[in-house]
Image 1: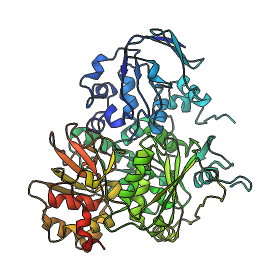
Image 2: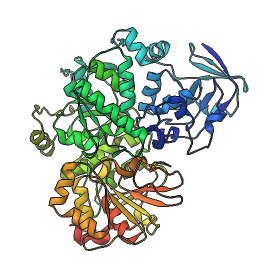
Image 3: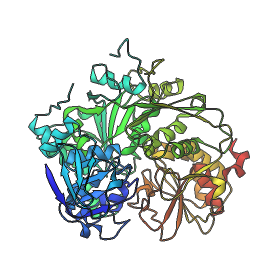
Image 4: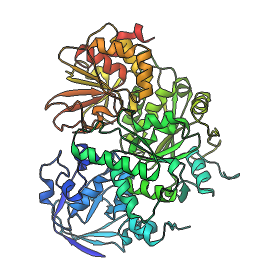
Length: 169
Length: 426
């Protein structure tokens, strides 16, 4: 899978799910597109307006730490982001994003600056930074995770496989 | 069926028992789940996803419970709609629901008797790890994962590596398990235990009440941990035996089990700790920030809203008044805690001191209702998170501390050392 991105957002380490979508909104708004308007609101007002469809969000260590709210990846996905690229992801967020079919990539994001153009090669687990002319290796995605992503998320996976979860031996 | 040959940690043993094959850290296993729960911030998505799965009934209705605690009583129509949806789902599928005023999901789960040692529990709330203190592998998951378990009784788990945390010594007067866990979070950091299990042991744990241990287990997730498990000593077995009809089969680690790391902490000379805004691992000794103005104090939550916490707060607040420029909000963690606090006279002490009593529930912790601080205000809280905006206002500062520190700070109107009340706390 190849994808070209034109714009990026760079955020710090330990971006928690309260920052992604505040508790003020997650309890009362159920429409993902409405939630998306409040993404990162406490860090940067009107962040959602700056996201273009297919953008990559770039971050540091431990992205998505904190609460288990699935509204966090749900709202991020609804902004039109193609993927979140970070040095590492917090555990619950990783599962939630995977379950919703939002692509997460782990790599050394020091090699990526704001607005660098990126091309994703998911089969080879690498990101080409076209602006810098370098390849960045990503941590390979597990076989099960790839299947869940390919099906478009865990709900679709579950239905397709009639409730059976296939794990590699 | 634990292997006779492989030495296992508690986490590996519990997942092995639920996968019905021997598993080691790093492997992925399909495990049967003993209990599932959701709260009002996560249940609307649980229900939505469950209904998309094409399954017409809950796998085991007696092993699922929903709790209305995070935004309760409802502050607006959006939340009211979610609560209504939960009640309707509960009625349709004959599952238990704890409605407004019953208390916080985690405290109610601990009190409920629906879990026993060695169980595997998933909750759509990150602080589900609290039950680790009862020798349970309990972990927070998102709403889709919870829906999958609700429909199938199972889920997939990556078996975590374990970091052993040894806590030894005797806590000085005025210093509590909250100070210990804040100190641990400071050294491990908020990402230091990501994907890992924590196993807490050491003679200091043995001396702690279960209420004190729940505080430690509760904050495991603040280091990214999947769970924070304790061995089952007599206090744990008594707790489970008293509340549950289920068999008590404690799970201990094997001698020679493989740990990714071992961290040791001595508590004898520990001092009160404060987590500074806006990160839980931004921890300093209280004396470094003593005197900081405090506008709002909150005592409660799944971290520190239990009877022992209220007892400590009452000892400090007795015959004292909350500073006239400071608000003190107190929310007992459950109805049982509330009733016991009334019987013990703590509630009367709080009201005489000028505190505001809130109904059992999450209170101002998650910023959806009740006690939102104003711009530029400082709040000190017994909760587990101080992220920017957590209590509903991104322009306020949240400090985290023990119930003793919070009570002492409420009287002074500034961050204050509870050891000034040492004679009351012995």
